[in-house]
Length: 539
Image (cartoon, rainbow, N blue to C red; front, top):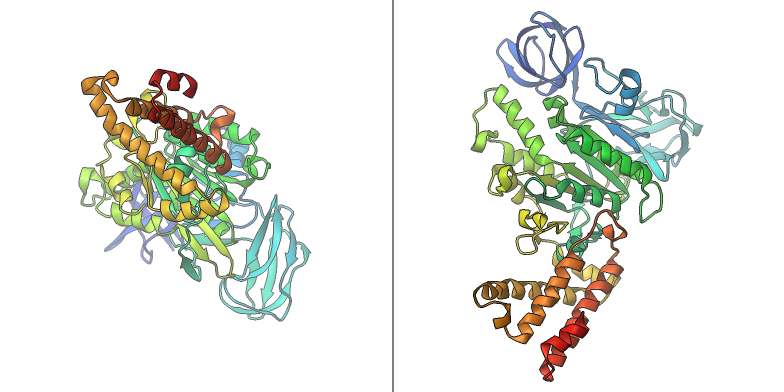
């Protein structure tokens, strides 16, 4: 059925077309723009267009597709860059130049690429949904091809080179299984059960790995004002994190930042596997000059791709920069729909949308019986560095780790500017227990002592502001000297040197030397030696 446009307000279009469903994807106008039904009313539907609506006119045709906004999942996703609608940006650049032209429904993955399939099932086998039929090699990874649709019996199954259409198997009921399948982005992918595991996820950042550790399948946010190093920290984690797959979302960020990141990723190697960094990376980009509605979809596109690789049993890290831009897109769309605004103009359902998104992280037993994990790390850009604003507060209710980026630390050129008193991790006790076994038995003890030293220093600095440093006791002055070294040499890392990445073993050795030196100096003070002599050798 074909309807007509009866009203246009920016990217929001009113359509006279019966039979549409909520969140159904539609094709709008002669330019064939992609849109999504966001509201149904008597006699009309409200459509949010994901592309620039300039030149669109009343009376132009609108056609429903009968499907929701979906991503195509299959081999060929790695080492690629897509927009929020999963259009391949490099292919579009070669075809259209540096700016995306609106319209057209382009295939996201090339079905003509050479795929060599190795079957693990054979004709006559019964398979369940989500069970592996076989695999293809995707760079260094084994890409599993799953049974889709419903359970059934295999009639025929491919072996060796796949045909151009990617046909993998034919079922006895006539269904066909291809190397590619579509999945609605707002529907979480199924699994057998979610597990409670707290295995450490090493990021290479000493402040995070040692003081506020992150667990595989966990979630973390790091809010910070302008200039606090959110993007650089997130890109450093994307480069060095101990995971199999990284999905990076540039949501509403500046184009030059994304260009710089792509340049870096194209020449760097993964410190764990020594392979090219892009061989394990998927980038979803919706820069600040791209359509706002597609920005709102980009987060869902990315998390669906991440869940797909999680279902293969991989450890996946999803990084989004920044969630505030996604929330602003949500606010803009809500305003265009004339919905009742909540705090600071954000929609009243902001908190529930956040909770639904965070719930997609975790460690799961997949339908095929494997164990996979999806870890989520999101940066937030609170206006004016105000952490009481709605986006930060909505995330705080759902996240497991909070890394506060402090403006004062950034002004002192201390990066990463993670404030060691305002930050927290709900995983630290369980993760530290793993590191006690894997790295060193005194990991937890060193972490506790470092926390205590930093806390004592904070109290002493308040006293020193009143009486001066010279008015403090020698032991207190020694403690301040030790914690100053911890802050400057241990907690701070230069992202442009070899110190940008620190293994757990390197982290342990570094902090242990500092704590042992402090113990030795303290013992000498107790024996009656002068502070100046101790500090002279303590340097």
